[in-house]
Image (tube, rainbow, N blue to C red):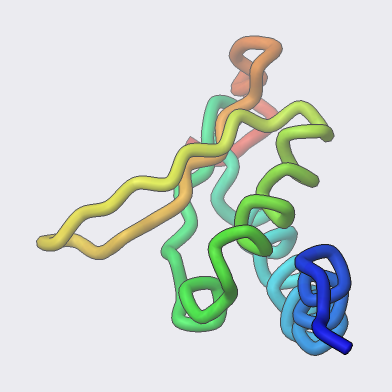
Length: 98
């Protein structure tokens, strides 16, 4: 029997579950280290780039649902990165590294 698109997406997501969990841990650690109260810049690593596009979007949507504005930036000179900013304004009132 032919596989339908939804089953295929579930299968691919299942195959990438460990990679997604490791990536989430890396992103959370990077946010904790680089967030300055306004934004955090995180390099797009190979692990992230190897995920299918729809899984990358689902992954980033989890952070958007938590209140982050997430932009993928593509820069040939300096390398691609993700920019996370907080939608509720500036939190840099002395609590974060500058």
